[in-house]
Length: 390
Ligand code: APR
Ligand code: PHB
Image (cartoon, rainbow, N blue to C red):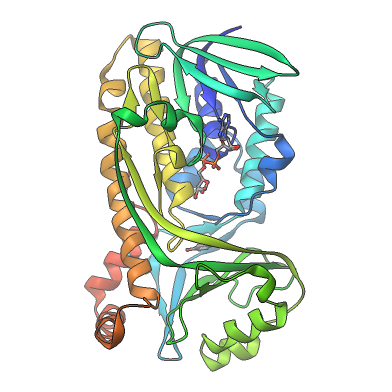
């Protein structure tokens, strides 16, 4: 088999890249370790920046997102048991974010890919990358007890944090990492979200909390918990009680509770691998960087990497120019580090740090007070939240 771009991984990065390339007539094959259903089983943050929505529109998959997604003009911060709205649209000259589940978005991209007749190889085992230092890279994998090989011009490593692409070049990268001393316990429930038009970020002496949504009938909530907590120790009742205690009285009163349909504990990590290009191999999305979920930048960063990468590859094929390819890593990393900074900052501001003591807490209180009373600082939050320009 031969293709122009072999894409490793059928998550949002790989699928969006495939559509952007195909639209420009660049042939691509996606090689995915899991089944399509498995990929759709993952539950992740679904807050889309305008830049991401525009990209989805560009590849023609925006219809359901516009019909079923919810546009948010504000976010809310809760601290000292009081709610503080931040009007992100007003502070950024009219920009908004859209709440639309990442699972739904992945499904839309998968369906568009199938409708366009593009090849995706699911359940590919032992994927390995070869010869990307030269002009003729190859990808090998096993499927149904047979060895296969794809010859290509470029390989796009869109295979997430645990993928094979970054592992293949591990001796050539510098890693930057911070692991946070707590996790997020998340609950999904088929109940109307308590705050359907603004994500709520809560700071309380008991720890962080978050009220989010997947639709007007499906809620997503989180509470900060110790990393060694077990999901089994958290009954639904215990979760709802804890969430209520971390919010202001009015929100706490209004929360509609119900049985959880998913409950899990996720670690929080900041991670960047540099560079993001190795000859004819490129890393994009979670394969190259991870942000803690506070601020929901993961998917949006993946989308901007993929925009830069598709532009660079299309330039190569259509104009025989290497300019985009040569600047890919530096361009991505400039935006990546700003989103890393923002996610780290919002995480630091909103969580209870076990070893910080009274001093850390007082600094948080002062910063939150300053934030909601200073237009300059609210604007800085808002312009990062809606997404920095490409
Ligand atoms: N071979 C082939 N595919 C692989 C391999 C491998 N060795 N390892 C992993 N994969 C697949 C995974 O099964 C997954 O479907 O690569 C895909 C990577 O998808 P994601 O982890 O969703 O990463 P990405 O597409 O970059 O999406 C970024 O996901 O984690 C969130 O916050 C993140 O929202 C952001 C988005
Ligand atoms: C989510 O909906 O899962 C979500 C929303 C906003 C965040 C993080 C997660 O900052």
